Image (cartoon, rainbow, N blue to C red; front, side, top):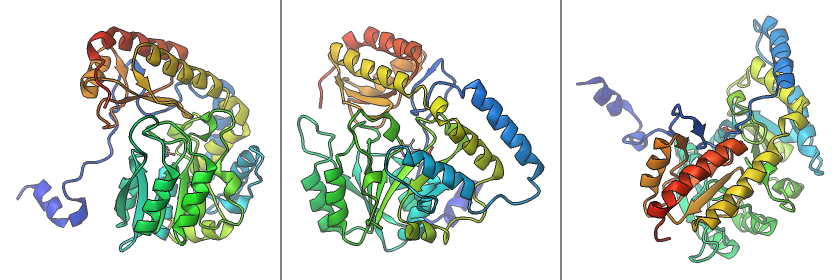
Length: 375
Ligand SMILES: *Cc1c(COP(=O)(O)O)cnc(C)c1O
């Protein structure tokens, strides 16, 4: 018996035949496929991180602060800048918001329980859900026609009432479609969900267009509501692996039951705190990225393609005859974008002005032969 077959015979039945999450990590000139911030960490912050890690290194014989209290305080202060006060006790963090989502599913999902998400949305939501033995149900986002990717509030409420899930995922701004949810929809889903945990994944909140409020403003007196955030996108710290959430202190307390002790290493805490101490500098590139995002929307429409309006650092665009053929042709020109599995659509991250130009030039050369019927 070969090793693969032996392993398969031991593997949980529900994991057999699955493929792992796999955005290609290819070595290309212009990588616009995972919504990272293209700008490197500024020198001043690199120096602050280096000093912080040097100090921390001497103490690595000891376990880190299990409660990462100083970091939670910094994250609370950062969130409070939005105008909604958030306390240290309301904040939880993990190695990326993916780990924070895992903690939520470990605590509030599990065998016999069900999570509902409205797809297309973040592909890790169903993966994390099923990893914990929680059943996943693909809800529908919208209605056909204009704004087909918008989440229709009445439809979402109906699906929640019918399924009675234990966990509901909302994603705002939504990956991969790019648009943010209005808070009325969040409240309607929350109220319809009655006993369920409602997770609003706000990984891209800092990129939202003006006048887009955060679900942070809804947290008071809603102990079933959670808002997750990450330092991977606007904060340009994807390699630092730091995601976090804000919720009622009682909910945060419950997450201690499932996290591994000392899950946030001393260097991780030190690096994240150094970044937060320079929040303005770390967020300096957000406006540049938003300008490039808006430029992509404008230019793709001018090319006759079908870009979806975006509150994030990426744009989903349709109007391609065969999205995989276009994906490959762009890659052949040194530009890596994301095939998110929606026929006729691709997703591109807004990068530097130069990267955006490279993408737009490559695509403009392809459009005469690649544009095709919208679905
Ligand atoms: C990128 C992304 C995340 C972030 O994951 P990290 O683990 O924090 O890097 C979370 N949610 C959505 C919707 C994302 O697109």
